[in-house]
Length: 77
Image 1 (tube, rainbow, N blue to C red):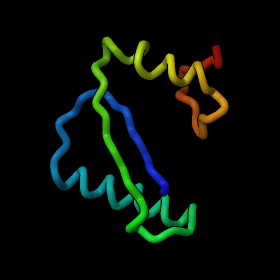
Image 2: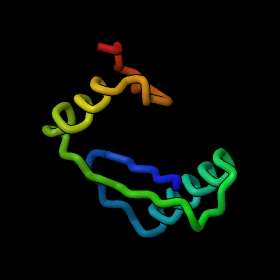
Image 3: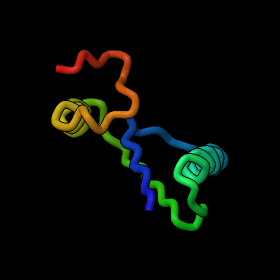
């Protein structure tokens, strides 16, 4: 606990960018939830653009109450 799962369009990320992302997200999570970094897990899931609506937008629409930040295009429908 806690676990952060990020779905994104496929992108080749360098080890340096992944390390920076890991550090930034881990810092935010440990500060926000007052936990040690050893209990934080992060996963990345690439989703092809053509699958985005079916795999991601449908999840958002099904559980909008879980959104901390909605995408700018989101109309809530």
